[in-house]
Amino acid sequence: MARKYFGTDGIRGRTNETPMTAEIAMKVGQAAGAHFLRGEHRHRVVIGKDTRLSGYMMESALIAGFTSVGMDVVMVGPMPTPAVALLTRAMRADLGVMISASHNPFADNGIKLFGPDGYKLSDDDEAAIEAALDKPSKLAKSADIGRARRVEDARGRYVHAIKSSFPEHLRLDSLRIVVDCANGAAYNVAPMTLWELGADVIAMGVEPNGTNINDKCGSTDPKALQDKVRETRADIGIALDGDADRLIVVDNLGRIVDGDQLMALIATGALKRGELKGGGIVATVMSNLGLERYLSGLGLTLHRTQVGDRYVVEAMRSEGFNIGGEQSGHIIMSDHATTGDGMIAALQVLAQLVESGKPSSQLLHLFDPLPQLLKNVRFAGGEPLKDDKVKAAIADAEAKLEGNGRLVIRKSGTEPLIRVMAEGEDKKLVEAMVDQICEAVRKAA
Image (cartoon, rainbow, N blue to C red; front, side, top):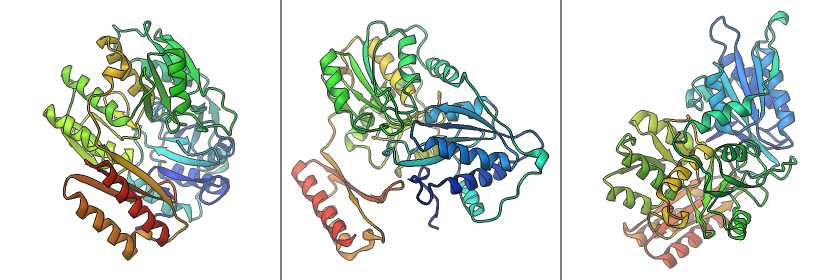
């Protein structure tokens, strides 16, 4: 059944437009709060946010909703999404909320919900909350409304937690690291973590003003980071997105290293240490066939899921894997975190960089990816993928691949986009197929 509010990663949209209004945010607080009122104890929700201007409005609305149904609120301020997941579990909270639209522009915002175990909510929980949004809320009695308070040491708690994932016998003293925080949630904690581990830190994207989050910076636009790495002759560059749950790396030559290469490196290191579980890793249908072939050469499997880090986590938990992620840079290491954490992933990469003694340009390129092209087509409404001409274009492309590549066409779960991806041995053929399908979608849309 199609959902009215929840997408693949919580609720997301343009601020002050349905569903991302203060009114709906308050109702989410009431519905989610009521859903997690279980038992006689004082119930608690942890709320964090990124640096968007609308974060203040959405935070206030959520606080009103939660407290009105009798749930206490703990505010931690601008913090990465994985920090909220971690603090929810550490504080024995009943629920965690992150106010963020991740890598989207500042005008968008979103609401991500975590259960008491620090994991994103199940489909059933989201469905129950969504069903309650259009019903009258059962408010607490006057004497039983919740209280709200701010925790001032939340950043320090998170920094301490992620540093514990870094090998105790190593330091970063020998490394010059450029870190781009996308003017987002990690603008304080990321440089602080690297500095405390001894690195020579050059920080970018650490001056948020409410509107510059993800603006020509961060993991979705790493050109400025590439230039800075070359300019400063840094050993490596680290790019996070607005809520710091994804990581893209730039090597010492200024080349971009995506999530597939990072997962290959992290899995290889875990395999050598005897710490890899499940006999492989989990990734989505978007990961390059080159990664699958590389892992196969090590005797490892690549378990694929649909797009969305929540589906990666679900497969990891059900199948017994401890490493998974997405090509876009969401990397989940379940021995250390319950969701994608850009800084934990970065620390695993940096640990191997220190131990290997190799330049990052050598360490971070473990396989040659097959030619792959992804293009997005924006649409106003309807179901363009059900159009007969679009179906014919897709069928024609699949026939031309003849089993020597892959085709993934899907509707985005967070934006009104059709994503068209193809990969294969022949780069020109891949480009032609993607353009052909995109043109058919544009006409249908």
